[in-house]
Image: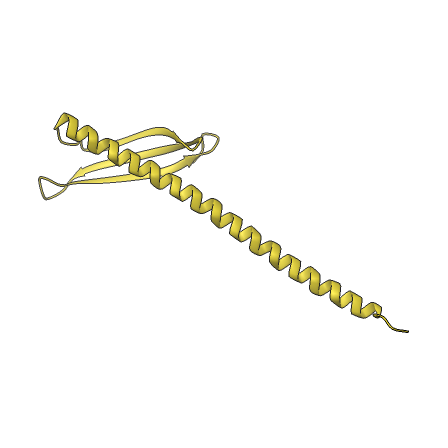
Length: 110
């Protein structure tokens, strides 16, 4: 008689299961990295938009930026983002330090 023994079939199933598990884990990691990259890219766009708007406001008003903190909520890509801006003077009178922090709001939680 020719064929496979039960032990050979069980070993083959274990190998296939291990391969499937490794492949599933790799696909999950790629999906998470893609989601994370998309989220970080959108947050970067929110920060760039906020900075560009501040620069345009500064150019239109020809007034210096106001030192202090400012927070607002914006929508981009059907997501809500909290934008925190901190403006401080520097030792040079023509330069200002502007820090922008962006976080995604999910169910009004960051």
